[in-house]
Length: 249
Image (cartoon, helix red, strand yellow):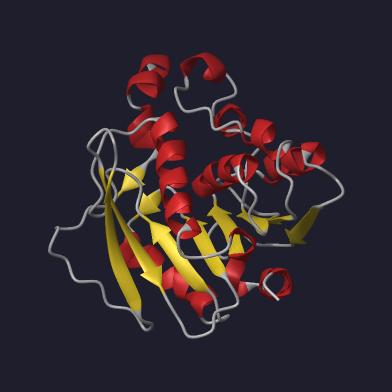
């Protein structure tokens, strides 16, 4: 029963979206433009593009597995405060976004937004930032393009690796439709990589991130250990804030 539940309910376990009415009005502390893209398969993707005067660059941010842009937009303002433009999208079925979920769709949708940025920014101005679920997507994108840098908050070796830590008694690799093999993508990333992870993370194991770091190109990757931090409170730690500040100089 547990095995069957994991297979048939895995999308409900992995993805925890909240939805918004299409007429929902976002409110934030910084100026932003709301974007709506339609994909070739008919999905509609909603995003926020924060813009400031004379930005240091642009951060393309891929958020975690829960919530929607009404929450994540507020989190993104942390980076706007550091004088960066920020583009953050809601995945399919999150917020106002629609469409059928699949691992391939995550990657294709990410590239769609990257291509949008290439029309408005020079590629060396683009920083890719992934948080939790979004780290696999951001790493895939970095492996296919030439951004300025890649920043990964609470990254994982692969979704299979995370699943094995949660369900060690099950054949997770056979059951999971969403593999997100970050360890494969990171080997083909040519830009600087910063990984940040808390030692007390009970969602994505700290050791999963360390395994990822071990296979990353050593000449451009660094790992920031945040002692005592969990999965959702890294921003409360000076080690995290200083690390991000140094990466975004």
